[in-house]
Image: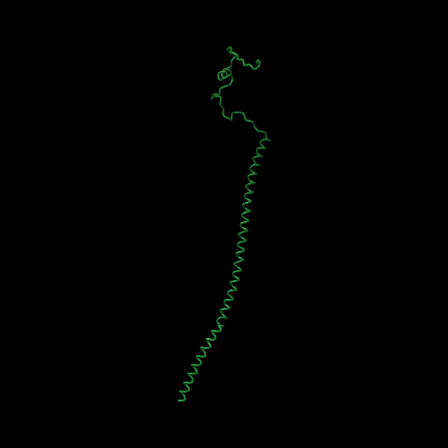
Length: 164
């Protein structure tokens, strides 16, 4: 059994001249498929002409707060990243400074060592001129003995010649 409330009923149109207005007639002519109006280009308005909901002052403040909060969050992240890069740069600078300091200390030690070696070498060269090895001394003594023998021989010849 069907409920009379749920049944669709159609009414026939019956109009008498002055009862219909031009707006009603326009609406009736656009009507298609039982009360679904058809859009026409005449009725299209730009979005600016439609009424807009104006947000309350609190909503505006909330939106501004969220926007600023987001911007500040991004800025904080950017500063944290910059801070990390600067810490890395400082660490690199410290390592380079330490490396240079060690290099300088080593160079100074090498310089001192070279100075000491140079002094020892100069002293050794001085003593080398004065000192000879035992073989060199023996050779020199032999040469002197040979010269002495030659000189004695020459002297004896001279004396013999004088006697004659």
